[in-house]
Image (cartoon, rainbow, N blue to C red; front, side):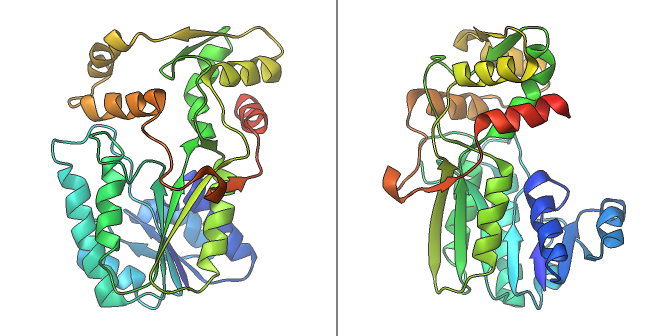
Length: 285
């Protein structure tokens, strides 16, 4: 039995679907019964649990050959990341009580960075998982190529507004299907203690590369327009954010280069999917 959290998202959903197709038993962890209906119809056992509910998570993790763990994104965390701390404590208790055979945690590039930024959320979870008594793997994934889905509508008008800058500055990116593939491999492997697997595409990409991929996919000119750093806080607050600084500092980290992988470049695993393939799929969706 494999237990999948985040099953309603791209990565978790791809993992669950592949495991089912291969004949494995899958338990999908969802927050409400309604969110589990689709996966029950596909053959999953359903477990209803929030990530801050240690009792429910214990039952969800019990008897698992492997747990794929995702924590929900919180782009507007309160100071001190209390949600992440609360979730981490509950997850740790559940792991210790249920004793799954292994845990694969979808973490992020830069989770090890101590500089204040939004990715400290994943760092908190990593710190907790270092203390559990079962084998754990951190799958530190690069910037999702699918983040470009936010830009599809504007790209069709001929412009992509970019927070990534300078426009030719390349950062590590990865496609969700490559993340899912490596996560599946890890769930099928056996090890002791802690593993850290860092993952990006074969090449790095810039904001200019994203615009070029849109231009190719759409067959029409697409230019890139920088969103001035001085406007970010006001813009994010106008979009409903209360605590925009962690998100701002995360983008700074990518732009300034201090958010990157912990290991040497040659040790980072490489996905096979190119940015053009992902952008093409987004445009056609």
